[in-house]
Image (cartoon, rainbow, N blue to C red; front, side, top):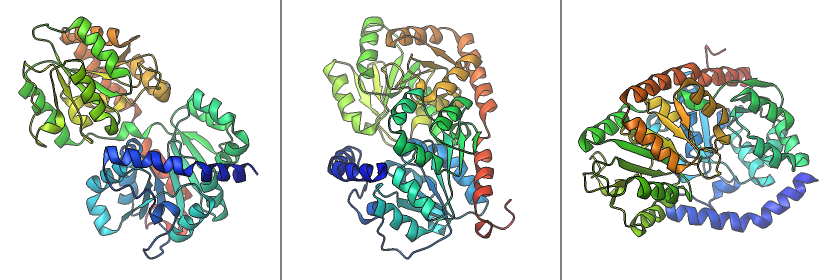
Length: 436
């Protein structure tokens, strides 16, 4: 009954969902196929069966899943990767071009969670098992997978206390969905306990896939080349969310406006659809800035002494931005968004500052702070002040860089643990030769 009501509500809300996706597609670009046949579980390709289905909803989950995907592919597993956004699909086409061409990896849209659409998806691809990344649990999808006898695992699973409270209000709908998981591999013990409260079973702790993601050497070299070209200290404001840019601009204007030899402020909004709005904000505030998109792909963005700010309006260059910076301030944590991922900055060895709101990455943030790789500050003004102190203290920055290396090394291995658990769930006849 609850799923029937949910399905009816989803059908009524679908036009608003499609309108929102269409607006996002106009801002971000790419081929979204919002009303394409694949979004409704209809395909003009021949039916196939036996692939391992992995779902990584968006760009962040796709990047996190990359080491796991490579382990599975190297083990001889044929993989079907589903996603929801065009930016995520573009990332796969860039990073897995050879595997796509060889047919070892295939891609498809995950259909909207209409009962018929998800049934058609599973009937067409007949996966040997399914893997969901982080928290993509959909009631009709899970019911259809159970009916089709497709075991589904949730890996690198995370659930904040706030999300638990929200899902608990929908317990009659969500508990059966979580209970249908064949196994749940949580990021932390706290995540495991919250997932258990929602009905997840066969729980274990595997860690966070993001710790295994190695920055591409070409991007690291690009960022280091930028830094050498600029010849000035750099503070990166990374993955900022709506409202946070104004906080940092206010702090900069109070602390640094008009100062000689001021550091370069490298501002990288979290969502590409906000690039133009943030550029307009910088212009409105009368700040001297350039946009990364105005430079050629491999050329250093212009950031001489006449430029105060650089807007990082590109996709896929975050490792380069971190490699170019002396200090990273992680966005999403200064307004109440729950914080963005700090692991990528630590993996590059960049000292990290976070704000008060880090519930989305609570354990990673606390571990990084305990190790000395990160520090917490109360607000944007304090973040800029502390970043300036670190710029003047080479020893403190070096200590944080060493701590970042220890922090990352201590948490690696989640992809290998997930791969072993996944292969254990794959039916024997579908496993590649030599797998366990």
